[in-house]
Image (cartoon, rainbow, N blue to C red; front, side, top):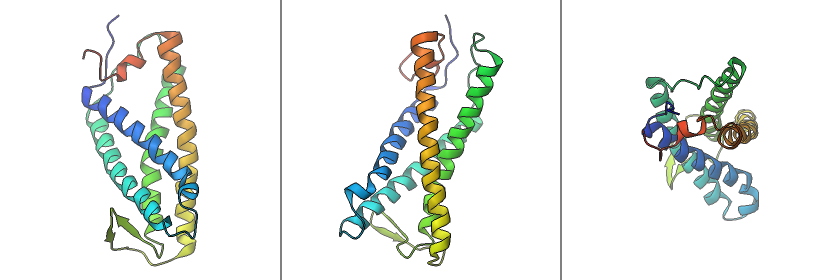
Length: 180
């Protein structure tokens, strides 16, 4: 069966950013274990998380721009209209989280006395030290991370369902290793 596939660029961006985001989210969940509050290493670890987040945010923007300029392949005819709509909504939710999560973390940091150090280079904050504003954006950052984690679990489970149970070619659409 011939299947329509995403381009190699789209596939590579998907897999690289997906794996990097999983690592970054895990890193975020482990921040307090890696560098408890009040310890000398806390600032270094937090700023590494911020620096990687900025890089990922830029890569996510690149991916989003690529996606907006390149139409995805058609869904297989074996998928019902309900499945297609659910997949579309799931993908939109993933993209929203991929944009909101790093952006809210960055904005929060700009309303903190600590600001952002990008791989050691202090970036000039564009906001005042406003703990209440920081709390709102950092809370949004944390909630988005939880929602994104749940969406990723659903995304992976659905991909595995298509690969192992349905065997309908949906999983192969995003493979950078199959023939294009």
